[in-house]
Image 1 (cartoon, protein in one colour):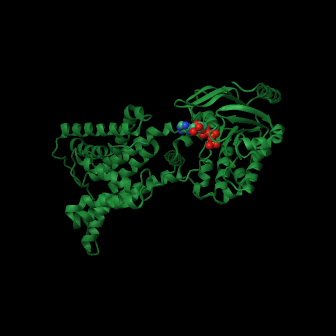
Image 2 (cartoon, protein in one colour):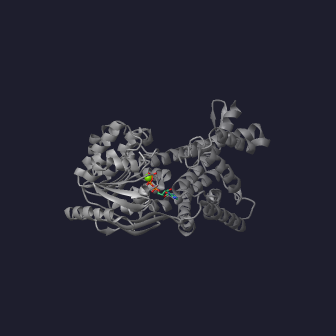
Image 3 (tube, chains in turn brown, green):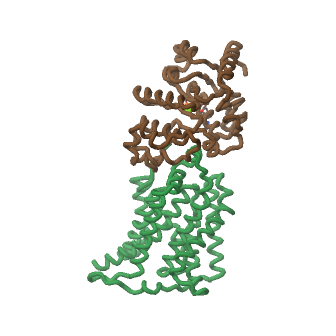
Length: 255
Length: 289
Ligand SMILES: Nc1ncnc2c1ncn2[C@@H]1O[C@H](COP(=O)(O)OP(=O)(O)OP(=O)(O)O)[C@@H](O)[C@H]1O
Ligand SMILES: [Mg+2]
C-alpha cells in the first residue's frame, strides 16, 4: 500500500490499542482484494470488528463498501485475501453456511420479500445462536412489526422495512451484522430510532459493521471508522478523531 | 344456454390440465430459473404411462392417479440430477435447449415403442355418462376432472402459503441469492421442487388420458399453449399460472365452439392483449431494477 506515513502509523496505533483491548475479533478481513472482471474494486483491505463493537465503513459512492460486505457474506466470489469469523476461515463456505455461522446481512435495498408477510420475513431464516431474539421480544421492541405482521413485507414504509430487515437478523441470532446504509433515504426521527437499535444491538455483544455516508449519524453510534477510497482503506480513526475531523470528512465525501 | 354451460365445463376441465401443468412450470422456473420445454412431453408421458398401465398391467385410472405422479417425480429427480443441474450455472438458454432436446428424444422414443396411432383408454368406471342438472346434461368425467384440478391447485396453494417449505420456495423464487444469505440452503430444495413440478405435469397427463387422444405428439401443441398460459399469468407467478390456466381453457373451449377456425388464434390474441396492457402478465411482478 502506498499511503502516507502519518496515515499508516495512525492506523497501526489505533488498531493496536483497540486490538489488545478486545482480545477476540469477531470479524477479521485481511489483504482483501476484489474484482468485477478486470476491474479491481477492493485493494488489499484489512479491517476487523470485535464483539460489542460498532465499526463503520465510510466512503464515496463506488468506493467499494457494498462489495466488501458482499465478499464477507460470500456473495461476491472474485476475491483474494482472507476473511475469518471468530477465528474460523470463511473462504470455502457458501453464503448460507456463513449466515448459519453468525453473519447477518442487511442489504442496501433492505431485502424484504413481497411474497412473504412481515411475520414470515422474520421467521424465514433459521435460528443460529442461543442469543437469538425470540419473536415476542422482537415484537416488543418493534411494535409496528407486530401490528403489521400479516401484511406483505413490502407494504411497509421504507423506515419500517429497515426495522424489519434488522429485526430479521436479530431473530436469527447473528453475531456479526453487516448493515449497508441503513439510514439512507429515511426521515431524521427514523434515523435516530435506527441509532437506538444499533446501540441496543451493541449492548448484547453483537459486532456491527456499518456502511454509512451519513457522517453525523455514524459518529453517534460507532466506536471506530474506516475510510475507504477507491477500494483502499485510507484512514482508520477512533470516534473522537472522527468527530474532530467531521467537517473535513464531509467535504471529502462531497456533502 | 345449455350448450354454453357444456362448453364452459369442457373449458374448465381442459383448463385444469393447463393449470396443473403451468403450476409445475411456475415452481420450476421460480426456484431454478429453468424454463422447462419438456413439460409438454412430461404431460404426454403421464398419459402414455397411464395407458400402458391399463393396457399391459390392467392397472386402472385410480391407481394411475397416484402411481404416475410418483413415477414422474422420480423421473424429474433423475432429470435434474443427471442433466439440468450441470447447466444451472450457465445462461438459462442452455437448459431451455437441453429440455427441448429431451422433448425430441422422449417423443421419438414413445413413437418407436407405441407407434403414432394413439393408445386406447377408457373413462374410469363410475365417471362415465352424464349428469343432468336442471335441463343441462354434463359429462361426469369433465366435472370430476375440473373439481380434481381445483382441489390439487388449492392443496398446492396451501402447501406454498401455509408451510415452512412453501415459505422457503416463495422466498427462493423471489430472491434466490438473498435467501441463501439468510441461511437457507436453497440448493437442497432444487431437486425436490423440480421433481414436484414434473409430477404435476404427469398428473395433468393422467387426468387427460380418458378424454384425449394419447399419442407421442399430444404434448407438442400443449406446451405451446402452456407458454401462452404462463405469459398471460405472469412468469414466475403461482396464482397467475392457475388463473390463466383455467382462463385459457375457457377461451379455447369457446373458440372451438363458436369460432372453430380461430380457436387457436384466440388464445394468442388474448396473450397479445394481456402483454400490451400488462407486460409482466396478469399476476406478474413488475421487474425491479
Ligand atoms: N455488478 C457489478 N459489475 C461491475 N462493476 C460493479 C458491479 N457492482 C459494483 N461495481 C463497481 O464496483 C465499484 C464498487 O461498487 P460498490 O457497490 O461496492 O460501491 P459502494 O461503496 O457500495 O457505493 P455506493 O455508495 O454507491 O453504494 C464501483 O465502481 C462500481 O461501479
Ligand atoms: Mg453500496
